[in-house]
Image (cartoon, rainbow, N blue to C red; front, side, top):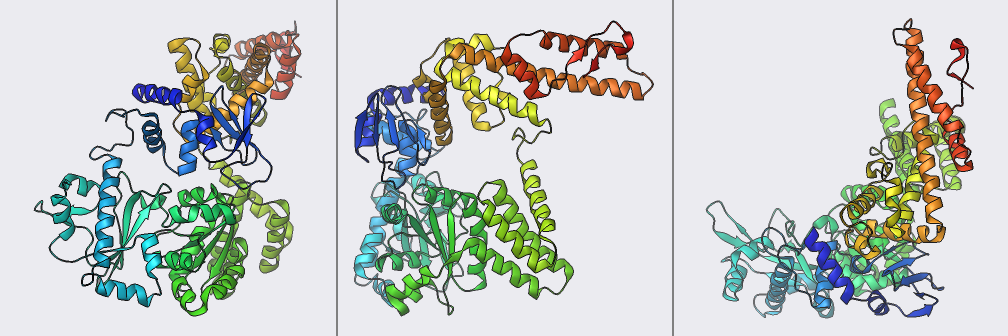
Length: 626
């Protein structure tokens, strides 16, 4: 970790964020910052700001933010280790095996990408070979795929027996271990190696930078596995990869929407006919990572699925995933038993555009399926299951803040009509489901029953964090109360822990040193927000003192509640507990807080619901709460 932090600091001093961002959008000086149009979403008025002094950026339109590493992660859709490698190359810094987080236990990601690039060239050469590629070219021709499109997607051919790729790669100087790590060959039980892909049409899968990370192979013979993807490697992960994203990204940003299809040829055909914002999910169900990646470039996804049962089921699963990413989702069903590629062949671009224009809203699609299942159900249990699935989805979306009041009102009326029950009963059902979803969240997610103290506590803690990322020299004044584990959200916990560790190790620190500790893009965005909000508050000492007093009130409220409950239990059990000690402690808490004249302290007591404890000379009245 320390090696990575040191490398990050070196890179930060050599790669200027303003210069890097200027390669993607025009920036203009405005006061102490630079502003420009956001490179992550479409806008007409500049809302993207870069702070050259503290080396962070923030878009006040789409809310992304972070440092130079975050910018590369978001722009290139890569994880931190790869962003580190990209920026190290730019800065002229060589990464060691120890510091290069992009390395696996075996081959480096760079070496695997190099092997894949070589294999891609080999596959392309095979396809263009007059004899070797004849049948594969005939298949592509039957699917209407033209030579220019083949070249753009670099479609190739893996030939058959004799492990030709392995032999050629070995002759070219690639070691078998690297080919294994890259998924280009496999080992049998005897330890012998053989080609992973044989007699398959090869579709290279590239990331947004154009690197070949893996392959998808479509069989050209009678193989039970019609499609085969590269197995998961240190470079390739099917659940995070979108076929065609390298060619589609600019069009997706320009159009403000993406077309998501199931198959490689569907994506290829869409591009050939002018729909260059199409991508494919590698023949697997769309994942949250897929949708999060698309969310960086657009606000709407059109799911285009086959009309068979499998296609409809895949679309059904993708809907909930996409909606939870706050994407506008529409669905289009390819009719007449065809896939999108076949449909384009038969109808041409205009027919395909009409199909896209007929796409229905995702919730309308889900509702139509629910209504159909309900009416076709042959038992009360089946009808209940059909409605319960829809209620669960709507409850989850409400918990994510995806649905507005008008949408929820319409849905409630629809379900009310289907079930022939009053709307109030349906509303209650949705409300209970939303609450259940929230309470099922991770520990520390804010679902505690002590509502007011919990809210005051988190507000005070976040205020502390905002101050300390800007003025760490004040840490000692709140060291006893500043516990990272008290934060509700994991990202806040991690940043708070970095602040504490830096202060305890070095004393005061620079903001760049704190940035160097953060690798996750979401954490970097959070840190940027904390720094901006904290800088806007100012008056750090007084702000920190007020937050500390509120935490004291929270602790008092909780202890009061605990002691009061002990007192009640003692009285209910015939004073099995010693009530006098409990009453004395309650009186002590009340007098300590009530004696404070500071307005913030009194307000904190009220916010947290701390009862005033009235001291009395009468033993029977001691510790009485008002």
